[in-house]
Length: 186
Image (tube, rainbow, N blue to C red; front, side, top):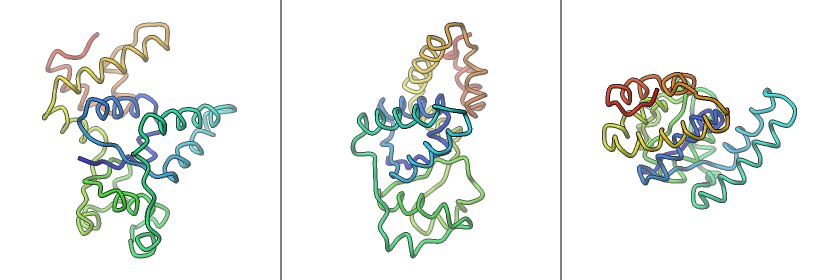
């Protein structure tokens, strides 16, 4: 399954790392466009001086790790497609260019399901998407989350409650499902 990841799910670090850990486990193939990566880099400016430089380094590492993930929208698709927010058409066009099965985004209102369906696409928020992966491959998702949680604790230098980490990453339902399975530490 090919999944286009919108900038708003790449920018929060924990969310991005969980999604990419699941992709690395073979649960889906991630896609994005150069413009999506640029939106991520520019969004980090609000974090303060130096944040954009860090983001651009993360983007370079991401691009090296996933060389086939970048897709470039076709000019014809950019002109032909419509969304409520014209600034989001490039995301839909990238999904079409990459033959994606779905778009994972936190921006539901600007990606109406009926418009996406005309292009053979679905839209899910990251919590819904990861829950669907968990239903199909609970051990792989649990292992992916555990790796990201362990790295977050290492970087923080202190224990971090896993369920709270997932909630801050906008993954509360995934946190509940993993807790129910007994797969969520602390």
